[in-house]
Length: 194
Image (cartoon, rainbow, N blue to C red; front, side, top):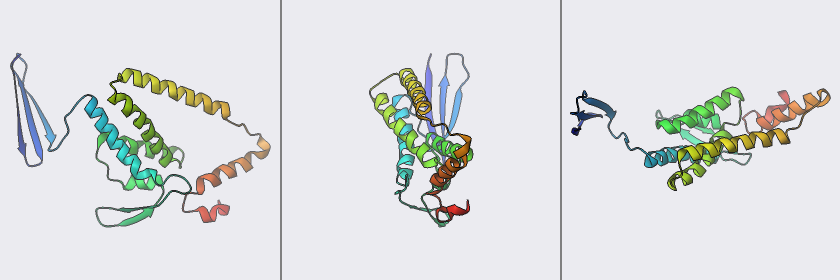
């Protein structure tokens, strides 16, 4: 199984030709220049670090005392916000693993309309824990099994502490829930109209 490997950079594309002389046809892979082709533990850690960079950006906006971020797009348009959904929309993220956090935030915003920052921060904290185990050489199957178990424990705990409401005070409860969700939004000063 003889093989030959070569690389050639043209413009912003790098062509990597991997040729095998074992009777197989040559394989040519075209990648953008600067593409990371590492594999294994190093690649997993790199992906986690990209996600943690996104989390670090949005984490400072979390909670009632969260700060505002000044976002400037490529055209120089400035936006000041502490809304997680807005921040995630304005971030120009190209890293494939970090884009997953954008998708999580979009799903949360579409489904619930709130909690985008919390979802991204929670995902980042889970990834921090996973990163430690990956760096220690723990098998990915064991990590996944542990995450599934933790997820089930969390769901069970939520069910355990859930409070049921009767029809008599349902409207009051819903108003309180809506008011809580609106405290971090720009409409906070007009909550009585909603």
